[in-house]
Image 1 (cartoon, rainbow, N blue to C red):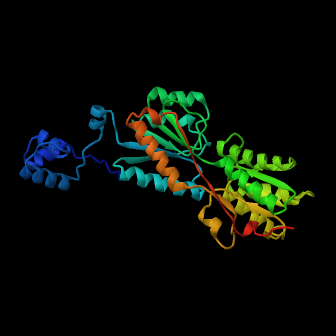
Image 2: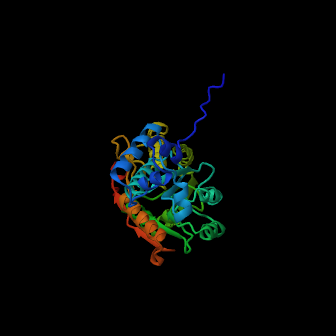
Image 3: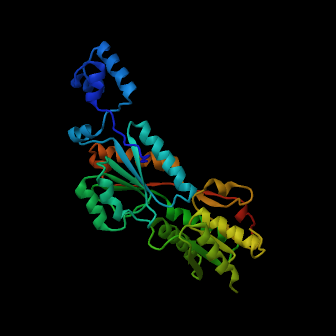
Length: 341
C-alpha cells in the first residue's frame, strides 16, 4: 500500500468555483489595494479558508521581478554566535515584510559554490556570515544582479558590500591586556588561515605585541571548533615552552583551552595561564568559564547589514560596494584576572 500523500494545492480556479465568483475576483481579493466588494471578498476568503488556499508568489515574481525572499547563508551553526545572528536576521527580515530562505553550508566557509543554487530562487538579496573568497564568485553575484552583504568579508564590488566588526582593534586590546598583566610567553589559537576575521584578529594581536618587541609567538589552528581548540591547547601545554597567555580567535576555542588547562594539565587559570576569546557567546559569561573576550555588537551589525541590503535592493548607489566597521568592546572576566608584578 502506497502511504505517500499526493497533495494537490488548491488553485484560484478552485476557490472561484467554490465561492461562485470569477477567477479575477479571487486575484483582486489577494492583491493589496485592488478593487473588490466587501461581499465578494468575504465569499472568497471563506472559500480560500475551506480549501486551505494561499496565493502563489510565482506570478508576482514574474510580474515585478521581486520575490520578497532574502537568503541567509550560514555555516558553523555549532557556534552559538551564528545561531544568534541568524535569529536576529530572520526577525529583522520578517519585520520588513520579506521572508527568509536559509542555506546551510557545511563543506567549507565560503559561499562561492552555492551562489548559482541561491540565484535559482530569485531572491531579492543575500546576507551571509561566510566569505566570498574569489573575485569570480563576486562577479557572478554582480552578473545575476543579486545584492549581497557579507559579515566580515573582504571582496566588494557594485553588488557586494560588507559589515565588519573591528577585528584588528579587538586583537590589539587582547595583546595590550596580556602585556599589562605581565605575560611573557604568547600564543594564538586561530580558526583557519585566510579567513578575514581570523587574519585581522591575528594582525591586531601581533601588531600590538610587536610594538613591545615581542615576536616569538606560538601558533595553532583549530578551525573555530571546540574540538580544535582542545587539540591545539594540548599541544601548547605539553611543550617545554608552555605559554602563559593564549588569545583564541573565538570563544569556543577559548573555553576549550580553559578546560584543557584546568582538567587535563592541572593548571590554574588565570594564575598559570591567561586565556581570552572573541565573540562573547553566552557560555563565555558562565561562572565556570568566566572568559575574557571581545564582544561583537551583534544588534548593531545586524541593523547595519539589513539597512545596507535594503538600500541596495532599492537601488541606492551609495550602499553598493561599501564597507562599514562596527566597534568591538573588551569584556574582562576571571580568565585574565590575575595581574602579575
